[in-house]
Amino acid sequence: MIGIVSATAAGAAARDRLAAAWPGRVRVYGGPVADAVRAAFAECEQLVCFLATGAVVRIVAPLLAGKETDPGIVCVDEAGRFAVALLGGHGGGANALAREVAGVLGAEPVVTTATDAVDVPGLDTLGLPVEGAVAGVTRALLDGEPVALRAEVAWPLPPLPVVPEGTAAAYTIRVTDRLVEPGEREAVLRPPSLVVGVGASRGAPAEEVLGLIGDALRDAGLAAASVAELATVDAKAGEPGLLAAAERLGVPLVTYPAGELAGVAVPNPSAAPLDAVGTPSVAEAAALRRGGELLVPKRKSVRADGRPATATCAVVRRPGRGRLAVVGLGPGARDLLTPRAAAELRRASVLVGLDQYVDQIRDLLRPGTRVLESGLGAEEERARTAVEEARRGHAVALIGSGDAGVYAMASPALAEASDDIDVVGVPGVTAALAAGAVLGAPLGHDHVSISLSDLHTPWEVIERRVRAAAGADLVVTFYNPRSRGRDWQLPKALAILAEHRAPATPVGVVRNASRADESARLTTLAALDPATVDMMTVVTVGNTATREIAGRMVTPRGYRWQESTR
Ligand code: SAH
Image (cartoon, rainbow, N blue to C red; front, side, top):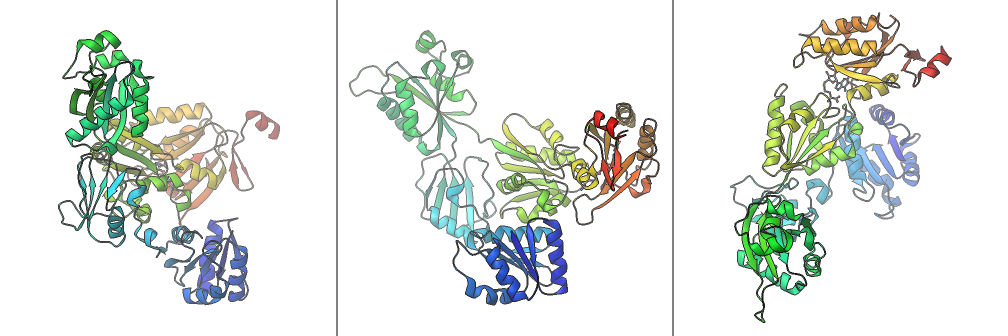
């Protein structure tokens, strides 16, 4: 429970907005302020005080017991401009609460604990092996000292607050799979970019395999820490020497059917494996199977006793696979943006989106995020930019309001995207659902969404779909219902529905669902005034069973229920 306390009228107004935004989550403490703060401190996990920080400090000072037990406290100033994480930033969750409160009130979160304030991911939390001056470089990032990123291998890293390319800096983060001696002020991140193809005769000893791999990497100047996997032919999947070598290196042993390997073009095919396992190459073909650059052609192990080699290996560098997250931001309210969406926004080093959507989430972005924003209309270009950035190996987030797949960026982006990038979709609350929740339960039975924008779709097609929905008695939600230049489409669509539905059929009109200036009206097919509808609005028309009940729009779930309530 979050206890909230206020002293002045302005504080009380802000307090009430918070209470309205978080029903069931907050408890308002009234009465004399000091008593209220003390009671909330004793009873709640967190406090939001619409009071000066000094006042709160004096009241709670004698109550403080320790980081582990004290509640998190956020103070909001009289003008509602700042939400200050005062106490319990991490343990008490005050940093996160300050951001949430700020989101609801349109205030600025003020967070002063070191790692959160700079919001830098520790170099050891990136999921890659790291060597060299890890602590020193992390401290430089936290202190805001210039740190350069030298990426020899493109890898989809999260954003790091580094200086622009080409700028001199005392500290360096180097991303490489090559053997390098890190400088005194240099941390080396090891991307898992190397694949070692291996072949082995039956009974090949693990030591021989490991020795071969070690020599091959060393001679080529490559780091073992960057080996992502060993690869071989299916027939060798159970070969003990290979399994033991993979385990020792801490990587999986990946295998492919001989037929697949036989189809891979390699520089050094030979007859021996063709006879034994059915492919002219094992090591080179397995290493190259998923593409990449052959850095070490096939080499054989050398045995001290002079007996024939039992193992072969080859090393390939795979290009980093970029990552494209297609992220729906929800209809507007911060608490309808999913935690997964927020995580993806912070995971991406490149953010692509419409400027007004970027503004909606700018405070969530980590320092160092490259923001590529553009105005209305440039959709194809935004989609192409996002895909291009991902293909360069970056972690990219492409954002859209509501759900990014609904009349939005996901399809143009994925129409451009090839299979050389990873794509992650994060669903968002689409306008029809946000509006439905405001109106009541209009979508309780089968429903469709239809966009009335004929910019990309011929009107004949739209009209055919409206007729089909009308004939099938589907609840219809109209997106893009009406703009200054497109004013006749909505009346026309409603007229088509009216051929099949009674004039009294409920129609819900929701503007700016979940945003600060949300408004909603419940009217009927006959009474709807199209002039009240604009591009910030969705219009949901009920089916023949939809009713207005206690001021809410309700579509029965089943037709049997409908019969019995008629
Ligand atoms: N991807 C979005 C839809 C984009 S099309 C989504 O999933 O919601 C743009 C149209 O969506 C607008 O013209 C309007 O009809 C509708 N819309 C988007 N957000 C809305 C909101 N918060 N309230 C009402 N309608 C909204």
